[in-house]
Image (cartoon, rainbow, N blue to C red):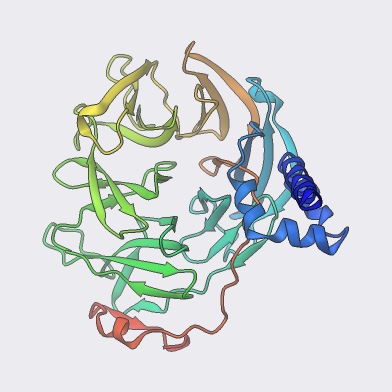
Length: 409
């Protein structure tokens, strides 16, 4: 019995030590012996490592576009570490990586980073989707949706891509919101437009069309750096009778609205971004870059929702000077707000002092995307190359949809 207790104690000590080791080193340790390989690959250790609170460093995944020729860009991922409040002391933790498996280098505005979720990130150009672990650098490309528009109809991906985890089904889900209309669009109030929602279940390995009440579904509006995964739900900016935050719960698959603060109106000249501040959902309201300067009207308001989903819990946390920018990028250490200027520069605004300074980062204008992630060993599940589609799903498709004959159906 004593020997068994000592063996368990030694195992616990080894695990406790390994939880303090960076993922890069853990990957190397798997090559030392089968015992270490089995330990590090085990679901128990992966879950412990994912939920550890020992390491406090904030790691930043930075996506940017670098112009290499007229109308041609290299989209690059950088992996940076932030150890203190000196924002210009960001250190690379891995070499830069070209974004894998995306379809085009001729544009740089539409490449998005979505997540993180359990250490995983989705990379997309709204056509191809790549699931990626920044720590292990493993990735998988998802199969394209088989649902295509019929002739003389066009799909607009104004809703972008949502990504999250269903903890009951133990599955990752991808959600695409789009609009289908005649091509070319007529652009008048009575135009026949239809919103569509598609969901990809990673465990099943197929896309499906999500059924909902189309008459009550709000119009989704894309703002750079707005969409966010928070408390198991994905969030978009949308318009109903006024501006709202549209949420989709990854487990219950229910859409629901969250009302924005009372100062947010459909007719104002503000733009919006969502971040997490002190573990609370936070809305940044800032002046758009096309706005005529007005030092009073264009003040930047930062609203915090103290109780998630409760409209009455919105409080105005900060009001800072006008920021005529492309978009907020990231909230670092709960007080450093990183911003992208219209020229491609990155600026840092300290919310506690309202001090603005330039950050030593540059990219093609409009192309920066930044997220904070935690190093995890979360595996990237394999995606089956051959996918079987449920005939019952196909029967429920909109008449504007066809199944791509080049894909399994």
